Image (cartoon, rainbow, N blue to C red; front, side):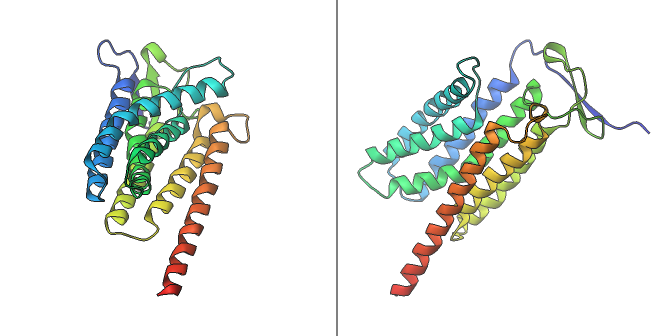
Length: 242
């Protein structure tokens, strides 16, 4: 019985799917943040300026983190660097806003939308043939041909990431809209944990215990857990006073 494989030609004469999906990830992410920010009472001018600053700082940090961690040898887009850039944009606009409550609100909406942004961006990786999975010849293995052809079929880790983070986003945004108390912290922890776990499925992970990306994700997960604990303590303190 022949197993079903996915065949992708990485030679694209006109529109490059990787760049297109990166642009789309910023569009859907920025639009979602803007809508949620306005609903949460963030000033419209602050929310608009965030739309402009978000892609600039995210792309800058994404490129710079790759450059720094490679010892100045490589350029590329680091997902962790992109995340740092998003929160840097939020902090920048939060400091500029006369309303001090805007920063935590924008940080929350960014956390809610980041899984969707990452999900969309990985479609670009899947179609371009980068960030591919370990050698795999089972069902739904990906065979790349064309410009970035691979010698062996690969596990569809990029598609797995897209689906995983789409699920995290859908569940997270529903909980956030329903005002579940710790929804934002749970989204943050789930995203960092999922990214760390899925990195084991990459071809680049072969022969190493933990990748640098996984180390960053573990640190982020710990930050998320601390954030959750502090949020729970704050809630208990408020309940005790009432």
